[in-house]
Image 1 (cartoon, rainbow, N blue to C red):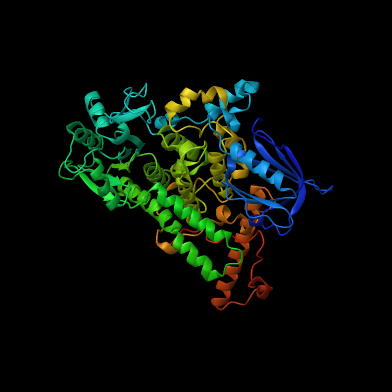
Image 2: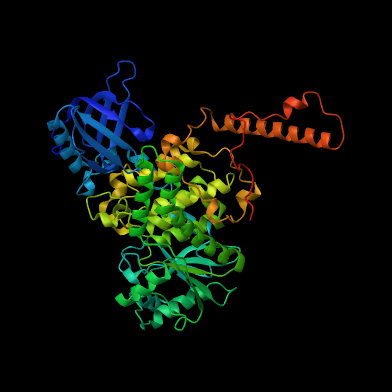
Length: 574
């Protein structure tokens, strides 16, 4: 509370244009240790707007006018609040307070660590046991005669950004593990991410080798060979470097780079062309700038969307996952994936491939386990990438955003294949930024353990699982062929859409005010009506008499809840 100069300001006007609000609301602004709260003055509604300080991404003070001083709050979920203060002094003090409150200097200042978790110790402990990477490894049948657990990193001495539990090829000796770790950036040696039980092929992950222009490591070459040996059905592996080729070549000048096919004789190298975090940050900002236009024409909007390059980047991430999934499922060839340090683009590519390959990861619990394993435990730098603490803004980048958007794009092509709906993805993204729970704090498993987060906070997964009914996709059917098989999306550019639910929430229609069961029943009823209309038309086309009322039946179907969503229940054409 010591950072709050003015805890309460009256006669403040609030306008949120992106939410479709036309007229400003008059009310009182409150500042607490964790939230900015606006309470409307209207005696009947008294509507409240709460904004977590950790969700504030930026503050602006445009020039004042005769009606007062303005303060603009930009949030990490892309909401924008315009506040108009009658007195400039109040605006200045609120601006100074929010500048400090939205930029915490230590983890102890964050929302999830400001509560007392001992008020319900049993619930807290249960929340952390809901989703565990070890459960996923067991589900994949590990350990087995090909992949074994190693204790080499049990104290994080081999690689401080890797988890303590690692699975490696049975043919990799402890000396090979240590030698390979020394030859990889940040010590991130090749380890298992996903094992396909049908083809015995595996997705492994690592970081770039420290090869420079001519360097090599016998242990690292043996490590890659060991990965290949763990797949008895193939005599080579793919190495997927997710970076553009030119970027990878430039890293050679800094003593890093990529694997040489001359030194690693059992590999086939493939570059995916996913740009770095700085390009992605700039690209997302440009797409946000398009949404800031007051009255854009359609040509202005389309030009801005194209110039942002955002959908091109989303396509690149999906293409990388498609390549890996085809190698695993169709060719039965293992894949080793890396970028520079192996915690951004590598996490994206491995996760997308897993979702395409494995129906389990297309369920709510499965996606939770996947993110916990491939992102949280494998050292994706959540606190750096999503600005949890006051730090270098160049470290911030929408890496998880892109993965979630790929899932949304896939759900547009395969509406029956995912157990969860759009709201699940949106809330998951918000929780990654908001620091309401301890799961996404820190940049590695080692750091989270040193912070004792399991003793001081709750897991985000229990929050999402508790509300799972509102995240249920009513079109999901576990027994359908679309749900069970490997997803094979169409990745031509015209198949990618702008995610309006994230970037233009005011333009997204509200979901129907009914339960998923009722909604699904209405969809089935609409389908039966359409089937009856088709049968009537076929009977008429065959020369039979038009049934009574057929003229009405062949009219335009009602466009209410009974109409199937666009593309609903159908697979895309290849």
